[in-house]
Length: 169
Image (cartoon, rainbow, N blue to C red; front, side):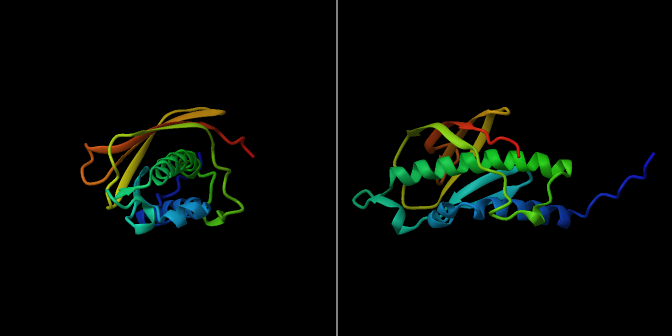
């Protein structure tokens, strides 16, 4: 029987997880353009779209542009799906996030279809979203995303997407 390794310090585990998430997010330039950030608590991600004037589509209301809302939801779904795959590999010890770069990152899932329900206008303030992976297989995944602003129970948009999973390398 081989001796058990002592558990890693919490700070080392957090640093490894944050490095993996950072590499994943920085591999997509459009995320930086929109200014989307991700708040990580364990394996749960909340995406944050900080308010910026460039996001306004209708200055009379003013309201966040519908395309920005859809992009925010789709980015949240793809990063959540990719994060869940990275999480499994990190926890199994088969992935070292220190070696993750834009070139060495696993390929992202590709969108098959994405349906957005605009429930109310996105107001000129920060927006938040969380995605839930409903099904994730070898070839296909289904994800549901909900976005809110001031009150988690008052969604301003939600979406459902189906994605083609990348083939293992």
